[in-house]
Amino acid sequence: MPIGLAGVDIGVLIVYLVGVVLFGSWFVKTSRSTDRFMAAGRRLPGWAVGLSLFGTYLSSISFLALPGKAYASNWNFFVFSLSLPLAAWVATRYFVPLYRKRNEVSAYGYLEHRFGPWARTYATVFYLLTQLGRMGTIMFLVALALHPLLGWPVWTLIVMIGLLVTFYAVMGGIEAVIWTDVIQSIVLLGGALAAVVFIFVGMPGGGGELFRVAGEAHKFSLGSFGSSIAEDTFWVVLVYGVFINLQNFGIDQNYIQRYIAAKSDKEAGKSVWLSALLYLPASAMFFFIGTGLFVFYKLQPHLLPAGTAADKVFPHFIVNVLPVGMTGLVIAAIMAAAMSTVSTSVNSSATVILTDIYKRYFRKNADEKESMRVLHATTIVWGLAGMGVGLAMMGVQQALDAWWKWAGIFSGGMLGLFLLGCFYRRARNVPAVIGAVVGVAVILWVTFSAAISTLMSIVLGTSAIFLVGWALSAMFGGGPSPNAAEAEAGEGAETHTEETQR
Image 1 (cartoon, rainbow, N blue to C red):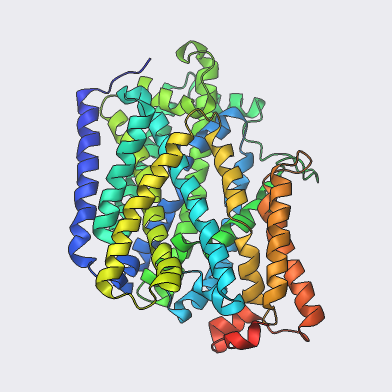
Image 2 (image 1 turned 120 degrees about the vertical axis):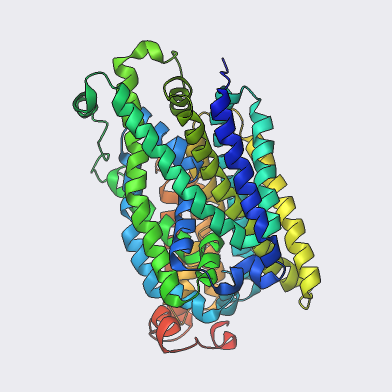
């Protein structure tokens, strides 16, 4: 049954929500131009951008679903985080210099430069669909956590969260998003640390008993080290992490927009490393929360109602174990996780719609006033659309699994197309089209095949696009190619569009 929050907890939550919305809205006076709304005037320090990237990683998916995963199984999906240093190195070596040199707010103008308008539209559509899934999943998960605390219907909470985030995103633009992310990242980590402390405090036998019971149950296992690709083995999750994180750093508008917002190339690179190195211990903490909860309720089974779903165990702990005041802080942290990522997706989606759809196909010479109207309108529309997806996800038992399947399908192998254009200068238009078609077909096959882990969809889809495009371009497009990424980042601009689109 739903249990209402104590007055102190309600006060903490209200103060936090009102404070964040007012703080985000304060930036309305500095976001009256498209450059400030989409790129914060390109003047933000790297540490702030890095904390914003970190907050984008640490959504309510991390805060609720990762403990749920660890509670139900083990630390297998922590392996995903181990790929971040490699992805961060590639990003700072190639991707950040590439986008900073081009000086475009959109991530997808580069694909048009390499392969033509179809590539830009392809990536834009799949990006927007992926963001809808991400926003919906996040709002659903945080509403699921708040429902037993407030006693409000899940659908009401989804709508409330969406409206709050959309309000300050439309008022303050990307600068409001980044600076509120800084605050929310700190609150989020504080809430998680508080949960860890009280798991230890309430553990019968103390921390030693936690590690003993969890070890006997193999809860710290990183998964099988076998060679099967039908299961989520250590190697499957690691390779999946490499590809997903390369996609995030290389072709995700949420990230590229922040590179541009940093005040220098050096500060943009710092932001990547800060976000990556913070996420490793943070994700370990969330998995540890799930493992700790497993032992906590194994030793005290009478404290957990029978049949409680894994995603709902942490919210149950928050309601029934944390003291008054601390409950409000942790709920504020959950809200911080959701608001950080949703606001990012809303702002970035509005930016993509303006730059890659509206000004590309409808009103190329739209002035500032018209462009700002489009940004404001699409921010509102996308916020409402995300709420709709969240409402549609009600009743999903394992929200994280549903999100990963959605992301695998709608990411559409964008990374493969980007890597083909970035690292193979001789790649041509027609081979890229064929590669994209093959890659999407592979993604759909893997997603609905029982013979291969669905995590392999982006791995095989990306590889198919790159290899097919590379092979056909090599066969019909000329001789060996230089390293396109090094040429872009170091020596100068790439060959002109007419030289690469044949």
